[in-house]
Length: 363
Image (cartoon, rainbow, N blue to C red; front, side, top):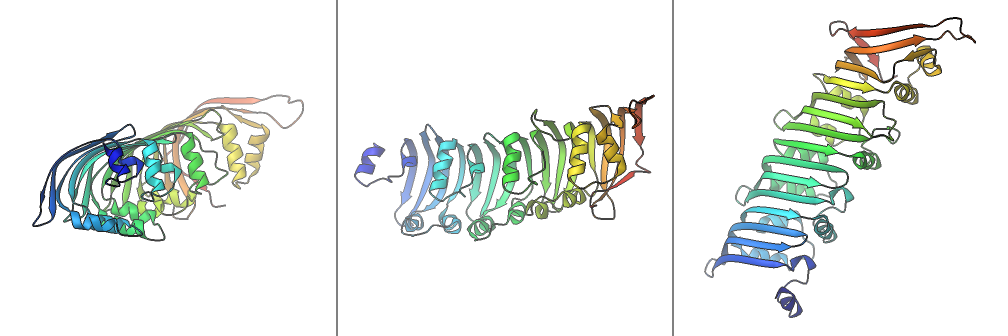
């Protein structure tokens, strides 16, 4: 039926507008307002169910006359609604082609969402939001988002991720990242091109807009087999201060470390010592001790197991105070050929929080 209506120009020729459609609604000719008790639209790549109150039909019709739509104009005409939707990647791609979403491959994936929008307050509440693609899986719950300010931000010529995070309000999220996620961060320069970080990352976090803090309540990382990342696996937690400022800036290791103003706690980790020495050397760390480690004069057990690690930013930018416990073995090979003797040790090593090791990463 909808296809025939398209042929007669009674229905939009947009491919996404063809599917199974059901609605129960009423219209008041005097006020030119509509009420929609229920509306359902289903097609293989898209499913939407919703209710809508006080639909301003003249305002919606006026949108069709505009040569260029903006998020702000859409918002002015949008009625109060409750909704539940499921969108496949193909439909998201088409929405991008229509200019309703930024043309970013990272946004292409499967989306399910449910929530409500209040026209008077311009607030949007999400009781569920889940997104997944080949790079990541995200679930989010946000009680209230100021859509008026968000629409103005999206319409602006220069996008501001930091402002977007502040407008999002308090939220909880669960994020699972796969190796393509880190490739995408490097392509967008959020990670240094030479930082060999890749693997499976899981994060459970909570954002407090009033304090602008992102609390990593539980997080874990497992390195991918082809990666040269020094950390093979780790479990950690901590709090990022000034999270919106950090989100709106290119990745900087020293700024990120400083943002964990209360410290980053690593419950346990396995470190690939060979890759660790390589990365330290590539990032400008100098010292005879490092050269001796790379040369094999000192050989640390691989992997190195550490636990109860606390990394705290020191007063000087780029310096961190480290406390930890480690289970390790080490062997000393005198730099003579052939060695007349060697020495080895194995056991636990600890650095107390009261007297931490200070490491300056800025040099």
